[in-house]
Image 1 (tube, rainbow, N blue to C red):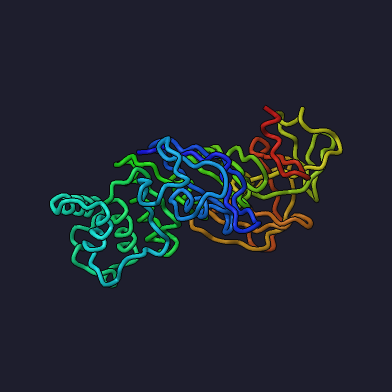
Image 2 (image 1 turned 135 degrees about the vertical axis):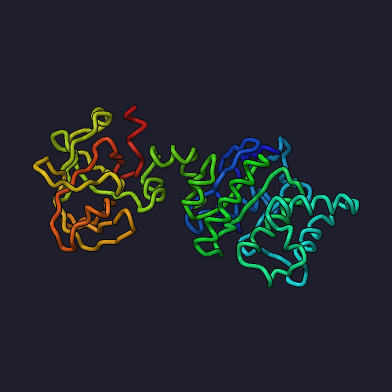
Length: 360
């Protein structure tokens, strides 16, 4: 296992910076997910760790050794790519063996590693098959085995599940999680899928436009988002964002009025323009005489089994609520809503930064 540290790391193509001086520490044995939309710089960052892209500026260390000028084969890392990258004319065993050739191991050691890795990943009965004879999930496991057989200090995964269907994604995701628990190897994993990030990661690094927006545990980034971008990127369905003004101790928006949570009262002032966020699971339907936050019209209902998603219109604002399916109203119905005040997030309207830290 090895730790990884990036200090003011920049990646530049010509005059254009695509990664902007990021700082990141990854502890030995940690499972870290780089998460963000396409074009945010997460894969470029991973490729710099692998040595497939040069570091334009800053310092990158693996295991307390600066590796800016170290060749990829000497960094102690192994990478699993999005497209499997298997040799189609080779069997599973030959694909794994090919990854060991640069190490010049004895035949007995090569066979031992291949056999042990094949058993670990459930490939021992597939060693004689070629990639064309394997399912998508099996091919991805072969790609993982080819990396694992080298016993690297660091595993790098570049969106390894994006080519799989939903069922296989779940299956292989579980296998990756189990693999990490067994081996305890440092893993850096790139994805744009927040479900993968939330279920696998010890630590999530959320990126946008070549910057790190927030680093923390899955629970931290979900419950205490640093800004509006993180708040709306993490969580499915996304957090609802409502423009509002501070007035008489309330957040007042278009046909919406909600009490300001106590923890925010000393950090806002009358007339201030803000945005408040509420997750769909924190919006409930009222059927009694309780004070309602808002009245809405149900535009679309999405049935999900035990739950249903309601696409609601409140004045000019569209919101999503997640409710028990047995409480699902008819489309075009008028419903009364309550927003859980303790679950509200408030952001500065201009900067998008959360007021949560200021309110502590």
